Image (spheres, rainbow, N blue to C red):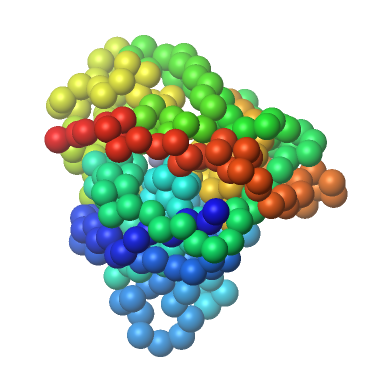
Length: 307
Ligand SMILES: [Zn+2]
């Protein structure tokens, strides 16, 4: 059955790019509502923003949603990954600023908050998008592909010149709570030179190395505290991919492969998937299908604990 959260859950922190303090509250919603953001700091006009791929404004560093009135919310990918990874299908996400708080740079604070509060089942079956034929998008040496699969599988390959990152590949089946267990605590990362460039152009102002981002410099980790996983970068790319895929608007059943892909390419992939006749269909999940969706089988004790 579809699920929402049992009650409101509030998170406070700063936006990664704006550096501004922000308060975000995930509230319960009824069946078939889907995930919506609401800007509570804006008094007039349309403050509701759907968590959907077709309102994504292209930005290379994060995923920003913009409604028809021009009201936006940025850096939605980690909270979207947490909602999808916990199996939350319906929620209203209130936010009093333009950017989701970065917290520790991963999705695990959202996952722990959601699962501590618990989920409520709703009287409607889960509907999901089943991929029927492969679709690929390419940009330079990056590609993103979605292909038929009985379960959501995320495969990612990265290749960075920095020796401390290098080549990393990983594939995970997103059932049995694997998102929370394997991916949710992997943090945003960047290269030292990029931090300086971003901050010079007014970005990443809320970034604190070692607190909410891992910083790499050539052959070593430049931020304090080291890594949470030896292959934390590729795991974070998979986390981002789940958050961006969640913008399909319902669970997506297919095999996603990202090669050096980013937010923009994954969004282009969803746009192409839904624009390609016969590539995807909506299905109502029976119990066997629902048991394979992200979030099913998630166990509290398996959620990583971080300081
Ligand atoms: Zn990210």
